[in-house]
Every structure is written in C-alpha cells, then in structure tokens.
Amino acid sequence: MKLRMLILPFVLILSTYTWPTQQSEVSPRAVERVQREVRHELLMLPYLDVFDNLSYKVDGYNVTLYGQVTRPSLKSDAENVVKKIEGVEKVDNQIEVLPPSPTDDQIRSRLYRAIYGFPSLQRYAMGVQQPIRIIVKGGNVTLEGVVDSEADKNTAGIRAKGVSGVFSVTNNLQVVKP
Image (cartoon, rainbow, N blue to C red; front, side, top):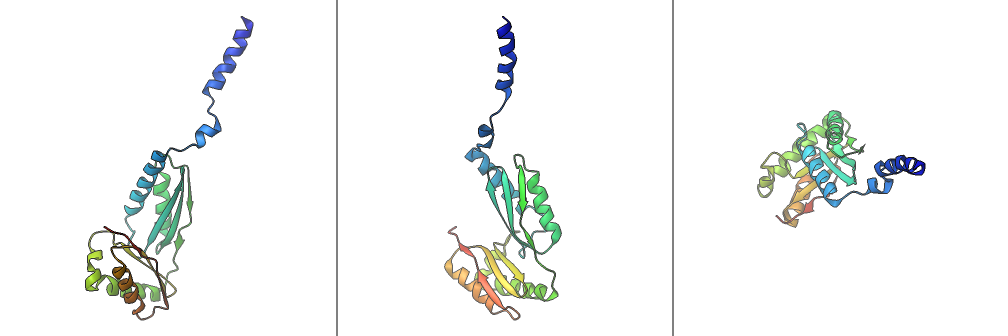
C-alpha cells in the first residue's frame, strides 16, 4: 500500500511531462498555415510599396525575414505583425533599411515610369501589389518579383538599364506561368 502511494505521484508527474522530442516536431500543416499567415500579414502592411522587397523563410515555428525597405518603420512593422501570428515562437529580422537618398528617389521614379509605363508591362501595374519590385541602393538597381514570360523579364531589365543615373541592374525576376 505504501509503495503504491509513493509510485502514484511519480506516475502523475511523468504523465503530465511533455518530452522535448514531442515539442520539437512540427507538422507540415502547421508550417503551411504559418507560411500562409506570414505572407498575408506582410502583404497587408499599409506602407509596403513597389520599392520594397520582403521575403521570409519558415523553419518550424521560427520565421526569418529578409529583403530591403525604404522606411525603417516598415522593418519594425513587419517584425511586429509576424510576432503576433499564432504559433510563431521567434522572428529573426534581417530586413535591410535602404539609406535615404534623393538621387535614389529620383531613380526610383524614373524606373517606375520606364517599367510600368511601357505598353507590354502595363498589365503588371494593375492591382494593389505590383509584382515587379524595384530596389535601388546607391544607383544600383535590383529587380525582384515575378512575371509571366521570359520576354517580360528581359523587357523589364532592358527598360531599367536605359534609365539615366543607373549604374548597374541585377534582374532577379522569376518567370511563373499563370
């Protein structure tokens, strides 16, 4: 009888303890849910525009944010909205804030008109979120995002190279079939 009384509390403690290996396992469904919610929250940021590029990586319940933004507040806003997602345990914010530059701002405006004003690329200007992201840092341009064809990718790159004040163009546009 005394032995049972000693074993019972021990068994109760063990039954309520969660082993570390069980906690570290993350179901693929949970990761998909977190990915969907992170994407949604980042796209809903009010000051996100065509001159900002945000990306992320989900590893279990840890999220790493990447990209470049023109406003420091956008970097902190992105981190704050991702932290509030249910299940996210840690956010590693590696977003780069681009230095303020009137010259880069002028180049951004010219690039926007050159790319989105070109007849074959005008369809990408429709909607709230334009798929071609224009990143300018010190006169160097990087195009990020997605387009429908290799021709559109090449056209955007050629249009960007023709803008005055641009030193170099890196065309990272991805071709995605609709």
